[in-house]
Structures are given as C-alpha cells and as structure tokens.
Length: 140
Image (cartoon, rainbow, N blue to C red; front, side, top):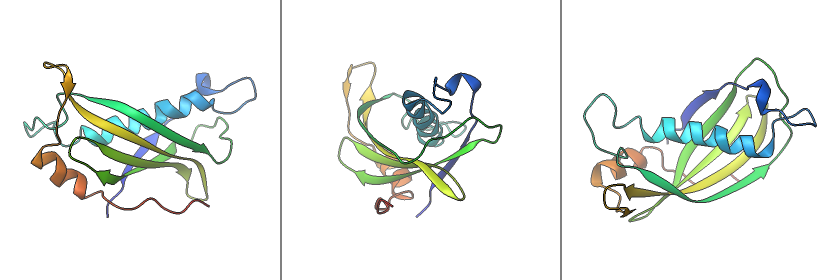
C-alpha cells in the first residue's frame, strides 16, 4: 500500500498564544495534503477525476502532541481507509520521523458542481484510490 507524502511548511501565523500550531490550522494542513493527493490523478493527463469537485462530510482529529514553529516542514502522510459507492475516507498522520503530532481522518464525497449534488465514485477514481487503500494504524 502506498502513502501519499506531503511536505507542509509551517508559517509564523500558524502559531497561537501558547506558542504552538493552533488546532484549527492542523485542518488546513490536512486540506493541503488532501488536495495535493486527490488532484494528482487529473492534472496533466486530461483525466476528469475529482476535477468536478468534492465536499468534506466529516473530520475526526486526535491531537497527539504540540507542534511548535520551526523552519523544517512537517510531513503529512495520507492513505485511503474506505472506498464506498459515493464517498471515501482518507486517514492522515502529521509527523516527523521520530514522532506523530496528529492522527486524523476525513470523509470526502465527490460532488458534481454543475448539478449541485453528490455523485458516485468513478471507475477511474476507484482504481487510483485502491493503490492507497489500507487500514488505519492502531493508535499509540
């Protein structure tokens, strides 16, 4: 099973009054990684996959330890834990080689922007997602 790896820079504005990355900012890191992952299939080869849009139906996030500002990017690893007919679940770890800061998951629903309604996952999308399909790791 492959994992999508995204290197996410920390910005000074990500910090809160307590000197660590604010809890809401972690959702932005997940979004950056998810968009990078889901839209890798479409660009460059003319594929319409995921290009029509998607919406987030649910987020779950466990804050494992604080992350403080530094100049080294943090790694966001993403993989798929479930593929349904019209939704998928993406799991993540925001981490360094020696520690995990956040474990999270997102339920994503492909969306037809022109029709303004959810749509089913296409065969092409399913094939792409299956390369990243694995169970979530046990919580540490």
